[in-house]
Image (cartoon, rainbow, N blue to C red; front, side):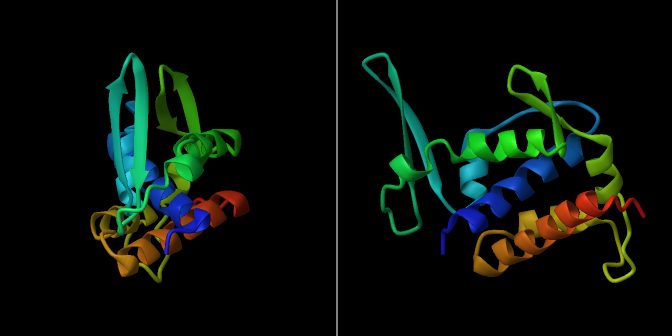
Length: 150
């Protein structure tokens, strides 16, 4: 299933994982990697001086029109809500509150949320993997919203 929330959680998980692993160095958003994290195929090519982006689901159905700006909206939402900071030139870094929550070690996990996200993202190829990413992203967003840091 590729509804917007599932895609949002997959893209968010991939981006937060990348920023967590590279912290404190800012990273540029890899559009293709975000779409692929959501189980979508992304390609772009130049057609007479215009960049054409194609997004296809697992069945090969073209989803370009409905999803072409989704990655930008995901990143903008994360910036607007204070999860990541835009440092310019499409480069982003985690905010202190996101880092604090991702470093938290809930007793039920036996490790940090950042480590759980890393494991979930690395196994996100199928529905079960994307469900694990969605669950972890929910814990991270919930932790930031609640102001948890331990």
